[in-house]
Image (cartoon, rainbow, N blue to C red; front, side):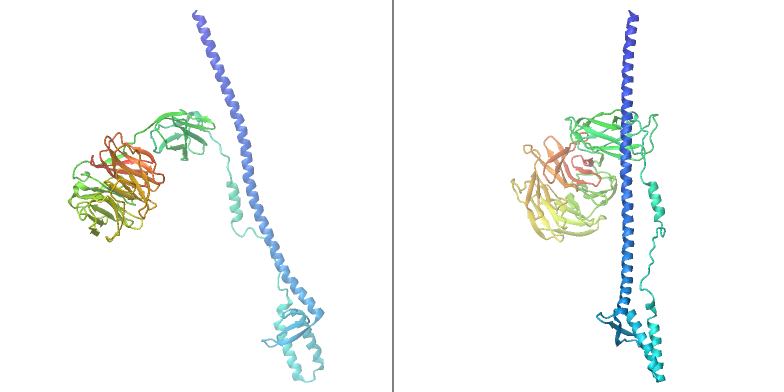
Length: 563
């Protein structure tokens, strides 16, 4: 019985082996066919590219031939005109009409011609007449004068003995470096590209992705012997499939060292598949299965409650300058904390505008100065990054100013929580106009909390909803994610890509929302599940695709990726 089982098992194994061999044979034959097809396509590409070069050379040849013909025609016209004038003068004769400004020189008119024609034949006829008349002169004085005039005439018309043009035309092509350059260019023109990469051994790195955020995966190319390739150029293809079967774009960046960077942005959370192929064959582990997380946690978190250099106390506002410097209103400590791009503390700003623990809003002007708003003193203060005072003013209309922004025209936009209006001031403190009023209808505010300016100049203000106004104060649209859910916004900002980001607090959760400025549609949110927010306030976008959020409840500043 055991012998029969062994025979059966051997038969099965043989069948599987034969099947694998047949499949291998089919795969090799298919690859040979693909090779022939690729060679034919390459032949066609080479022929096409070289025909373009030949066409360029032919166009240059035609230009040179045309130039030679034009030169010939111009020279021939001058010579034929001179020849025709001489023949016409010989037939019709010429007579002097007036003495020229230079003694001994005459301007002649041939019969029926225009002035200036037939110089050669006219002068010849006159000179012959003068020579014939010498034999009738009896006075030596007259003969001497005639001889003198003839000598002058010979000197003035000596140039007429030669053609006014020449027959010199020559082609040159070694007058500069173009022949060598052309030869070098042709020697370097085109190349035959092949690959030793073995798809089945290429390695895909691990994937860590969150919904709506850019994710990258490293792909390493290996040859048949498992050796890493040292050059790029392999035609990898990739596609990403989400749980609904929808495909997302994948950008492949050749790092030219045998590795490739795959970049994509998942549109939703859940299981995804990344299929990467080379020559139509999958790389190792493809399609790669991985989960996309719904949660977006901070990449950096700085600060803790206190008054030390690295601590914060009731921070409210934040602004980012063009050089990457970060400014945080450390309200409880009556100072502005200054950090670099890596969120390392560099200095503190103290003094004007920060009194009584009342400085909340902060903005950066087009010149790099800072504008602070103090709700206790009801003052707006402009200082330089080193703390030097530039200007300061208050206004009777101000009641509880809590946030400030700078328009494209340099105007100061102040969100007043007491008035529920946005007040627009000039830099010298003149009230120019107001936007909105107290109420709950469109264009009105109730507990106004934040204001910012969009790249197109629109004013964006927030209370329990976000409203977008034109520069003149006309309501354009509202942004309401969930009308039935009660909550309020603590801060709002816009990036250069047309996104509106806002911190929102509700009864049971605190998070950051990302809207489209053009449509007002909520795109996604940042929940910070691994580092929960508590009363998030001001926020600002940096140029590296991240957003800085002031977490007032946790007395810290958090940095999140959102692109």
